[in-house]
Length: 191
Image (tube, rainbow, N blue to C red; front, side, top):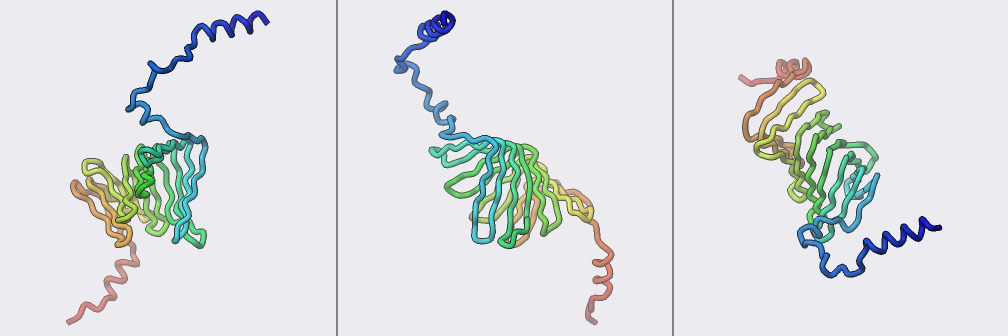
């Protein structure tokens, strides 16, 4: 009991109830999340399916209209339950006013439809334009299951058009299957 009284006395002596002079700096206060969750699963249901995100940590910043995630794994699932795209990244930021997302720190995406991996240090998804892009000066690599590998700077992919482009320093190897070669030989090339 004596220890409890001494401990309470030390706490009382070290504490002050006047916090008027200890106001937090506005910039620091803006970095404090309103809420933080650990080992979270977030599911966003959309017209064409759902996106399921699993994160070790999710922080909510309503004043900035963003959520920050750490150790992220995600899946895009079609209405019939098929996994369309899956991936992971060390961190992500979801802008809640636009549904745009930034991924960084060892980003890896796999498209089951395209049978290809995308590797990057940073990718940004623009929800309205349906465009995924990298930074102009950072290398993004695409590796298809058939062995084709292409990488370059200034990566951009328009998802609706299935159009991929690089701005500079493109290199890689494209693998042509025997089926493609046979189809080329059988084409009617005209007179």
